[in-house]
Image (cartoon, rainbow, N blue to C red):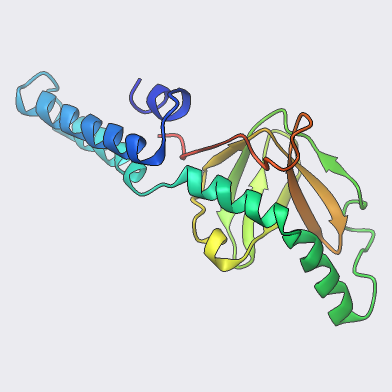
Length: 179
């Protein structure tokens, strides 16, 4: 309940989410102190799995991705990459321009790279989403983003956009890593 339902299904802002995490930590500590939760190691494990919710900022991540999309960040990045090399950057080893990876399953950040996030879903493909440092640093490995499709726009650049006719809303939800 605390590690899945509260963080994934309850509609709340970042501050309310942090309050809920603090409350869950206090509840586990109280139950442990009163003897209702008899395994101290288990209590510590629960608290350590909940604690990242105090600093995780899903609303900020979602907002930053939408701002980048609105400013044509990925298309500008592609143009800069192509103009700096003075050659076309697409090659046969990179999926064709226009290839779209679906939004049916959430995208998971497998790894934070020096240039962005390595994303995967249940599709066999993994994609590196290029990001500016300030947004890249907000990412957390194993966080998930729902309702986001990725379109290869050329130059090895993938552009995220919202699904279901709502392109400017790059992703519907950003979830913390599963606990």
